[in-house]
Amino acid sequence: MTFIFAAAFLVIWTRDKGKHENLALSLGWLLLTSGFSISLMSPDHWGRAIPAVTHVPYTLAAAAMSWGVLTRVGVKPPLVPHLWMAFTGFATMMVVQNFGNSIVADVMITNVTCGAMMVMTAQLFTQATGRDLVERFLLVMLILTAAQFFIRPVLSLMFDGPIAAEAYRQSAYYFALNWVFAFGSVLFGLAQIAGSVKDQVSALYHKTSRDALSGLLVRGEFEAQVETLLNRANAEGVETALVIGDIDHFKQVNDIWGHQAGDGAIAAFGAMTETMIRPSDIAGRVGGEEFCILVWNANEAIAAGLAERLRVRTNALEIGERAFDVRLTASFGVAQQVNGEGYRALFARADGALYASKEPGRNRVSRASVISPTGSTTDGGSQAFKAQEISLSDRMAHHTKRYAG
Image (cartoon, rainbow, N blue to C red):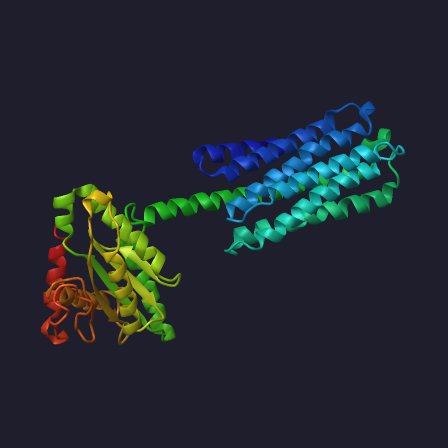
């Protein structure tokens, strides 16, 4: 069973060799396999050498699995302390083997060492973000695995008393070791595989739901999430606003500096947006050079403040090689959800504000409630548009024209 898990994680690793934690888990299960094999197939006359030899693969397996489990959830694994614990346990075992004929001290050293390593792993695992069913299952298995290293030997040795080396395989301890590890390995292994499968599903979802160039949500996924959040905002009475941003003169960027510079502009703008929004906000690329942000729990003024920060940061973006000196500007439109309106109506009003930002010279932020551009680098934002001057049909016609082709 342990060898099957070792092979399974090796196969998972070959599908994504960047996930080194799966290779570590494969190594851990392979070391556990070697420890079991030595324990089961070594000759009886080896006596106390059996726990001494198996101590090495068992403790190294614990260190490798700990590294894999913690690295997977983004927690730094204590590899050096674990290796020191494994070495200290082995050195202690070499000393106690010179005294008496009982094997109790030997098996307790290995169990305490592995148990301490698993306790440390479980404690660090609790620092990881995310507490879905898979992660809770894995945490429970880490705790149970750590606990059995202390409980199992104590209970079984209460029945056995001192165990002579030659009677090791006939002891209650050895019986408990085989059965506890048989069932425990299956559950622990399944928990680890569930975590790896969840990671692969999440990676696939991220790949299909995210725009490859900007890193933001693709239009369909973004709009679906926005619809859900707007319905929730209506039900809970939460203020919500929509920001639409458009890179100015993007066609000229492609024509003058080439499509590579254009792609760099999209990627840089998307990365900048991702770093400036909150976890509760969502951002998507809804057109060629057009981006949209749903700002949760924020009114129009707060959302306009975010748009202004994005506008200023866009001016400072460095695209491509410094020799080209490609400088970008962007225009923004902002609208707050009112009267329980849906996505299309909210988008149309934010799009109208964006249109107002572009007409007088671009590089501005305009609000739908008071369409007055601000933040101009051309004419100081002296020109203003009133909301009623831009009809819904005009805005939608303009929006359709921008996406034509």
